[in-house]
Image 1 (cartoon, rainbow, N blue to C red):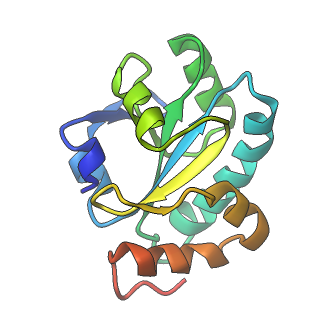
Image 2 (image 1 turned 30 degrees about the vertical axis):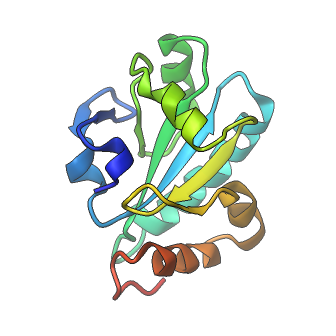
Amino acid sequence: MVDVLGGRRLMTREGTLVEAEAALQNKVVALYFAAGRCAPSRDFTPLLCDFYTELVSEARRPAPFEVVFVSADRSAEEMLDFMRELHGSWLALPFHDPYRHELKKRYDITVIPKVVVIKQNGAVITNKGRKQIRERGLACFQNWVEAADVFQNFSG
């Protein structure tokens, strides 16, 4: 379980709440900081969606990977619209959870979109996830798995 999200509830694109511990255990976690009103976020999100879908939804053996969206939207309605329109079937920190702001500070988020890939203990594997996904595609995931010390037997 990712320590930084311990005890928190995350939500699906449909609005269902899930326990972070159960959803994130033994997975590489990518914190996705973005907003629907941000053109670069709207440009990158479909690419992240394809990356996630290939790793998790369409793979014979789903990869140990989860995205957690941390919204920089101005309202819960904006956040939900963005999620329903462009997001994959990943999770999000609810809009009204003030922890969104703490995560932005902890991971020094000054521009969006930003993908910060973290280990189970919250340590950063890379804060250049967006660039790596754009440049290397699925190939970057194996490096993240090795750095995260999660499923040792995963081979992409």
